[in-house]
Amino acid sequence: MESLTAYSAPLEGRRGLLRLDFNENTIGPSPRVVAAIRAIPADHYAIYPEYDGLREAVVASLGGRGLTPAHIGLFNGVDGAIHAIFHAFGAPGERLLTTSPTFGYYTPCARMQGMAIEAIPYRLPDFDFPFEEIRSALGPAGSAAAPRILLLCNPNNPTGTRLAPQRILELAAAAPATLVVVDELYEAFTGESVLPLLLAAGANGDPFAAVPNLLVLRSLAKTAGLAGLRIGFAIGAPALVERVGRVCGPYDINSFAVTAAQAALADQAYVDAYVAEVLRARDWLLKQLRQAGVRHHAAGGNYLLLWPRRPAAEVEADLRQAGILVRSMAGKPLIDGSLRVSLGSSEQMGQFWQAYRRIDGLN
Ligand SMILES: Cc1ncc(COP(=O)(O)O)c(C=O)c1O
Image (cartoon, rainbow, N blue to C red; front, side, top):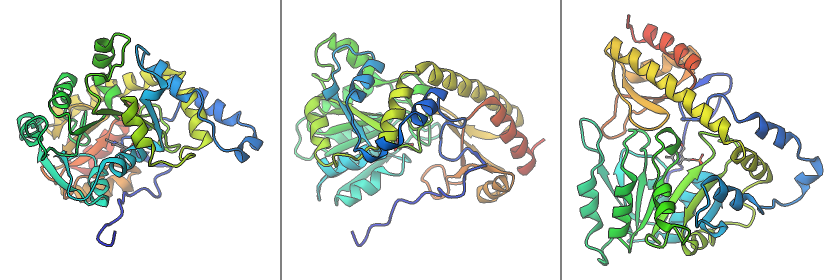
């Protein structure tokens, strides 16, 4: 632990600003979530949380069909799930296989377990998924040298790269000795997930029967707007979910998160409307970027990368002065010099674009 550094993100002083820096929901959760939290009687704060019914609600929201509550792991955010997965499966000398650049919390979790990390770069110029390289790094099926964990973020944060769900299932089937984790935090913005394929193939049997080494991560943080409450799910074969659950405390998820999750899952229409609004705003912003000749890259997810003419750190600082937060990708392989801009409502994207044009000297 001496050699570790804490995962740090610039998380303070963000309230009151236009937050396009963490890919959060920019307008807040469903009013039904707010009402449900307000309705919690104060004496319930004194009681340990109860999780009954939440796994069932997740199953129902995913369409049932062979999924059972035992397929659903509940975690303190997907971050909590990632930490637990590495704790449960990682060990010194084992290997994490992943891509680069990707979400920043995978590698510190691997390091905590003393694992070696192999991060395969996306393919320039369009940040395509390095499928052949990942396939060969998995080694032959059953190989003793197979990586312990393959972590795929799909669509990838921050490049937005999409890998067809069918290909993920191929990788999982080809590497039975490797735990394949698909972080689908942003799947709502592409509609591409391994789950519908598995549910259709399972036809009311265990959807994970053919891929008992696959875990799918989902969160209510981004689309449903519950980032501050911390609730995430890992979905996979019951034995796998049970094993990850062994390294968690009995009350790691608090009662507010449980109540909020129930209400959010019951109001899918709110999430669908938010996603549709973000996609509309995305189309509009992409048009402006193209017309203004700004180098950018947008694929999956509620975010895009853009390369300002001025130094990115200065543009980031000037945007902050204008009340808008974006995330500099300084130091990240392949995308150093870019800014990651989260997508919000049309009005918010209009506000961003007006400030950006002025700050980066476009006209
Ligand atoms: C790819 C990815 N996975 C996981 C997380 C963490 O999600 P949660 O808020 O559910 O812990 C994030 C948050 O930025 C993310 O981008």
